[in-house]
Length: 217
Image (cartoon, rainbow, N blue to C red; front, side, top):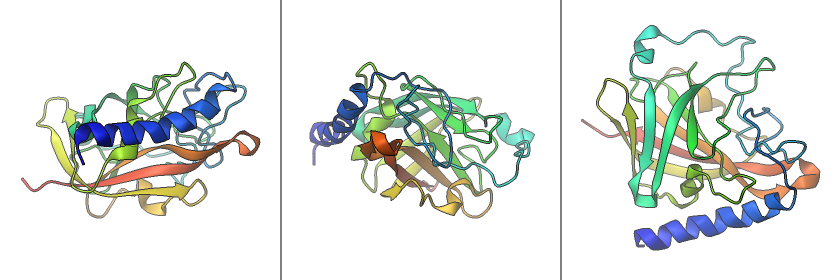
């Protein structure tokens, strides 16, 4: 499948979800509300991964200083045209994961492993769309395929390269418990919201999850 065809396929799916959102006229919220609202349309639409529960403890422990020396700055999947700036995010007082309001920007969960780490799941999240009609960069995740390369550019370090191994859509109540794991083999986890969009039930009803493993050096 050609790159252009793949890109258009993903955008068609994302645009269908966006059309439902636009009838509500909400504005994106910077914070998700896990575990209930992946996309809550009123009073402020939070098209962010609200089913993400970043930590089981009330207050996540600070990340090792070593990983903060090389924070991610940009994530690219050239096969589908994804190119997003990345900034660190944490959690709200309610324990929800904060997500950048700008759909062109992805958030890195800074209390977990950083991309390029030798262990654990590095989590990047982003909006699929905005209330203005603009698709977010993570809308391109609808069209990734196993084998696609993910490049994460880091500060003061070589890019961390990954190969996509899986893409799945999970009901918002069924997010894998390993999404935020801090141990075990290193992976990169990319998450955005997914249809169906049901306003009466709080918005998006699923998560789109892309998993990628490090490329051998």
